[in-house]
Structures are given as C-alpha cells and as structure tokens.
Length: 167
Image (cartoon, rainbow, N blue to C red; front, side, top):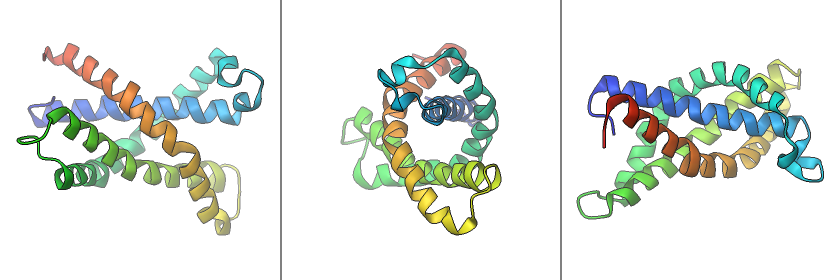
C-alpha cells in the first residue's frame, strides 16, 4: 500500500486506468453487440481491446479527477463507519473501502459516460439524461464491482508492489 503522497498518486493512476480500461472493454463489447450473440462475450475480437484503449485514455482522466475529488474520500468514510482495521480484519476493511468507492464512482462515471456518449456524441436529448444515467448505472454497477474486486485492485496492488518493491 502507498506510504507517501507520491506513491498514493501512482497507485491512483494505476487503479484509475485499470478500472477505466476494464469498463471500456465491457461497454464497447456491449455496444458492438457481443453480449447478444450466441456465445456472448466469448465471441469478442481483438478490436474491442484496441477501441477500449482509445476511450480509456480520456475516461481514465475523469476517473482520476472524480476519485480524488470525492470517490476515494467517501469510499474511505463508508469503510471507516463500518470497519476498524485495529479491531476487524484489515483485509475485510480494504474490501469494504473498495466496495464503498465503487458505490460512489460507478454512478459518477455513469453520469460522465451518459453525458459524453449519449448526449454529446450521439445527440440524445438532454431530457433523457436521467433515464440514460440510471440505465447506465444498472448496466455498469455489477461489472464495476466485480472488476474492481477481482481484477483491477489485485492488478494494481501487484503492479504497485513491483514498482515500489513492497511486500
């Protein structure tokens, strides 16, 4: 885990882009129709991964911004309200912090995505934003939760440990 502000910044960048890239893969695969085919996501092509790189490049910046403004703070507050690492299992407290952060960041990033991809890029009427936003949260929350718990966070901890030689 990060011990300095610089390490925290690097950790945040890795986590932000790990989340952004995974979520972009998921959303592009849905947009390309892979979820509707026989075999579903197993039919994805490499093109999905390349398209996701492009979108993750700028969506990761939004993740960094909003996680630093409120996502990480509120996630930590949710964890602190329900878990004390001095008394409770620290790993459970870490998982609770991750879950709390996803609970804040998923609606935040779903709003960003709804505005960018539906209103600005696709020209949907602004009056449809509430419905689009809720639909985007419903689509993305399960993926964001499990992607964070089982892929992005473990990858971030592993890569951070390699960079800073932590145990």
